[in-house]
Image (cartoon, rainbow, N blue to C red; front, side, top):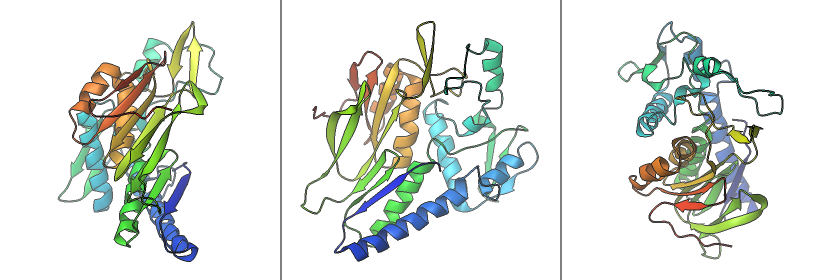
Length: 298
């Protein structure tokens, strides 16, 4: 998944801990083989290869994940879109861009993006992408889903507490050895060497999306690497969005979506969802938060 996973478990000794961690690693590897679009043998690659041609039969697990992703696409009015992988990569954030793309190029880049063109047949367990050249990808929820599955497996094995950290997507359960709650530090986006806040996290997940490392600037305007799949233009105004949710899969998708939706719409959507909270920091360093969150500032 192109992500670093760190696994922490509460166990009786290091031998037992290593066994638990190995179980989690195997599960994360299994998920990667299922959802990877880089692996030509994965079911996801098979779906993409057959876009505009025919439906592809897939495991019920993958079908269910794609179905939930479409649900998230609807929930966010397309700010999250599982077909974002169809987007032409016309924005470069490696320093090679000398001018911004034209309106025509941008419009053309998202011509094949649209979750509405994904057809799921639950009875036959097939997925069909209507447009030739269309693709799905799990960059927005894949590592969160893998973290959720690893956590569920460890809970099943009787692990009383732990953390699955998927490149900053934090999924926790239980308590620390001394009985304290796990505490999650949120990086200050204006100075990544400093912590902005520390928050307790019991049973649930927290994901931070930030654009303070990947962006380009033209004529004083900052264009970030988080692209709105509906328009093809980079999001702007927000530099950090942290979402707390019952699952890492949900938190992962919503953190990116908030960037795209913007502060007002994003917070409004989050406030409508049960057990979901959000902290947003804008480009000036102003802090916005959802209704029920308490920040323990540093």
